[in-house]
Amino acid sequence: MNGIAVDELICEHLAVVLIGVTDGSDDLALAVARSETNRLVEALALCLNGHPLDGAGRCGTCGTADCVLRQDIRSVLRPVGDGPRTSAEEDVLWLAAYGLRDDA
Image (tube, rainbow, N blue to C red):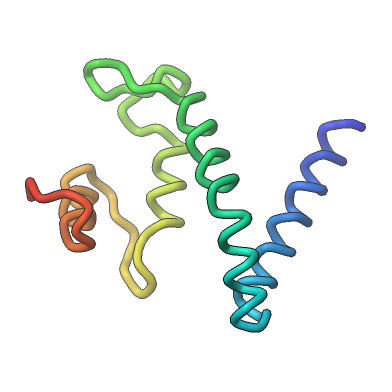
């Protein structure tokens, strides 16, 4: 199986997960969320591990402080209705707003 076929399978799987959670019954949405959340978090962590930050906060893969992967992840994970966050300081404030950090 080539990379394109694998990519298509991944996209199909993600679409099934999204449809199950958003359009399924409450029982189906709960079952899908419980079965897939751990896998999705692990996949995201694996992606981040492929873009490690050095001591100065530069991405070892992108070679800059503006890691493309991390920017895309921040953009996708922003709260609904919130505009794109463009700085680490805004990320800290966002995390604090959701009770995920208490140092902001």
